[in-house]
Length: 209
Image 1: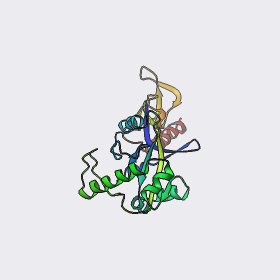
Image 2: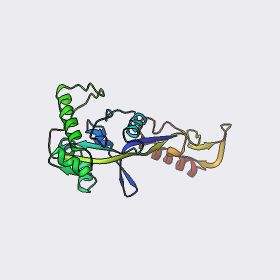
Image 3: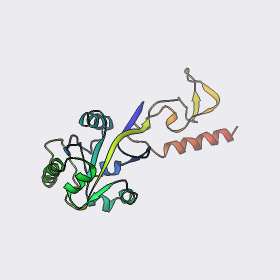
Image 4: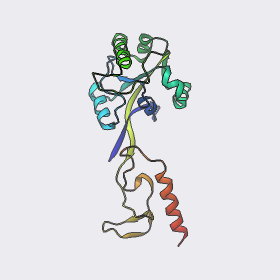
């Protein structure tokens, strides 16, 4: 089973994750009309992806908008800005024009979002975090789309990372580590420490024979 990352930038076929801007109380996602359609910080990757598909009439493309606040505190966004992955402008209408989305729609959305951020309440989509209030220019935007984040399921293994057959018996000489093995990896975010840990276990068992 695939787990999707809703917010990736397609850099000539390489998908760059903008999760740092989506979470960490980052910006907002809008459609071609400059309108919000989902709580950007929602942890339901599938739900956000489906909302993107609906809002884009099937293309999956949306626009992630944020201001200087998350850029100032997140090194990864500073790197993305330096690499030219994002569009930048001193005004919201100017940013919208550079992104090719409706300037009036985006400006209306930002005015409304600033009010929600000030009040700490989002009556439209139930967002609860507002570190990024879209009130600190310059403003940034990037076209994002869903891509594969992780996989679930695979080869069954034991505590030594040995592959098991359908009856639960060890398959001699065969080991599986990381997301190729049947685990919960990716269900709530991939744990980067698990694959190397099982790789170490597998190598240790191989060398002991």
